[in-house]
Each structure stands twice: as structure tokens, then as C-alpha cells.
Image (tube, rainbow, N blue to C red; front, side, top):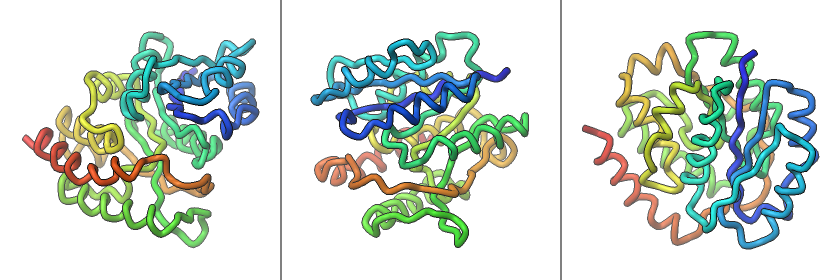
Length: 244
């Protein structure tokens, strides 16, 4: 049985954490565990997570002493997951479940059905038969980033920033080995790390971008205006660092 640990970074999620949905998922899917990483939340997130973990060995939580950003929260969770030799896959997903758990499970099934796939990710590709709607501002920022990413990575990827990615244990060891440059653009760094470890031909055979069927709008982005202003500079730093 292929076991997978889903890392869920959390920052001030006490009021909107869908605890019942997470419990139902691990109760129904025996080969999954969930690791919540509390990223120095200032609200009651830690207490909510500790209650969620009670009497359920497949749900665990880890609290960082102070806020370090989504990238480090995900990396911390992945490294903890990799300590368990039974874990074959590591994934990460946003805490608000804007991408529903059933969408993640669909990605997992597609991945294990083809032994060549080592890194797969959901994507907000607009389609007539999909429930994928975003506020214009978020959509516009995403398309600008996508355009820049295609120029930088030189890979035909529609969406690097969708918050659900799944990878084999071996890829996770490469991806999360060292700290990321950017707290918010670390998804781009994941693609760069895989690219520099392998090559562009690797992406054709061993990775897959899977269009979302459903996206639930859960409110405004948690990224601050100050962080948004820094994104172009962080993008340039990422490009210069990895494009060697």
C-alpha cells in the first residue's frame, strides 16, 4: 500500500479550519495521514489543531515558535513526514480547502496509476465543464506569474502556483532539502530544483499538470500588500539563483 502524508500549513486558521472534513478523509482513506504545521499563529489555531489530533493517530500537528512563512511551514512538515520510512508520497494542500480533498484524492489516483509519474500538481486551467472561478485580481496576478515562469523555466506549465502538489519520497528529498528563497513563490523554486536535478525532458515523462475540476473561493488571499510588492524582486532573485 502506497502511504501518503499531506502537509497542511496553517496561519491563523482557527475560525475556518474544516476539522470534520479532515477527520472524515483519513477515516475513509486508510493509506493517508495529515500533518498540520502551525506557522506561529496569533489566534487559537494551535488549540484547534491539538483538539483535532486527539484520539486520531493519523492526524498530527507541529507548531513553529514564530511565523516563518508558508514555504518554511511546508518544508518543515515535509521533512517531518520523511522521517517515517513508510511514507512513499508527500503532498501539500492549503488549510482552507479551497481545493477540496476529493480533488487531491483524484490527483493521487492519477499519479499512482502511472508508475512514471513522480511529481504531479493541480492547476487552475479554465474549462467550461469545471467549477474554477477566481476573483479578477487573483486571476490576473496568477497569469502574470505564469507568463514570467514560462520565460524563466522554459517549460509549458500553465499554473505553478496552485496550492496542491504531490511527489514521491525521492523527489521530496530533493525539493525540501534546503530552505527556500521566497515564502510565497517557493512553488516556482520546486520546479527549478527538479529541473536542475534532472532536465527538461524529465518533465515530459515523469511529471503531470492536472486541471482542477472544482475550486471553492474561500475569501481574499492571505498574502499582504507588502509581500505582494516584493514578489517581482523575489522572482528575479529566484531566476538568477537557479538559472545557472
